[in-house]
Image 1 (cartoon, one colour):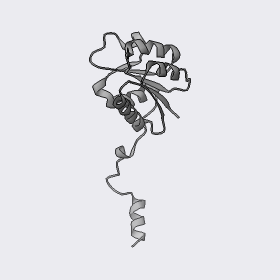
Image 2: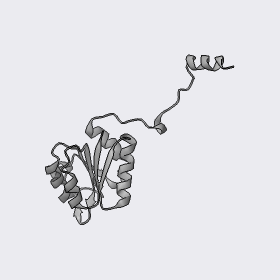
Image 3: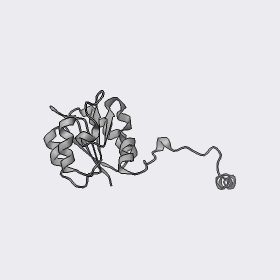
Amino acid sequence: MYKFLLVDSDHDALFYYGRTLLRKFPQAELIECRTAEAALRRALDRSLSGIVCHRAGEVGAEDLIPLLRQRQPETPIIWVGAGVPRVAAREIGADRFLPFEEWLMVGTLMSELVGVAPTATAEWVQAPAQPSAALRAGFGAAR
C-alpha cells in the first residue's frame, strides 16, 4: 500500500493534492501536515512512498524540503509552488517542481516518480464499441 505525506498550511490545497493522488492510488494512506514541525516528525516514517510539499505556515518549501530530504533520502518529493522557482528543484532536494495551478497533475507526476502505472478508475474505463460474441450469445439465451 502507498503512503503519502502532504504538506501545506492551506486546508483546501491538502484536499486537492489528496484527491488527485487517490485517483491514481485509490488505496493510499494520506498524511496531512499543516506545520513544519508535524511534517518533519512524520517524515521519520520510513514507509512513505512520496511527499508533496508546498509550504507549512511561515516555512516555505525552499527551506522545508532540504530537511525532509535528510529524513527521506530516497523518497520522491514533489515541490508545489507559485510562479517560477528561484532555484532548481534538485538543488533543494525535490525531484520535481510543479506550479500550483497544475495541482491536478500531482497524482500523474507521483505515478511517474514511484515507477508505477496509474490505476484506472471508473471514469476512465470505456465500454467496447460492440458487445462481444459471448455477451451477444448470452442475451440471445435469455429470450
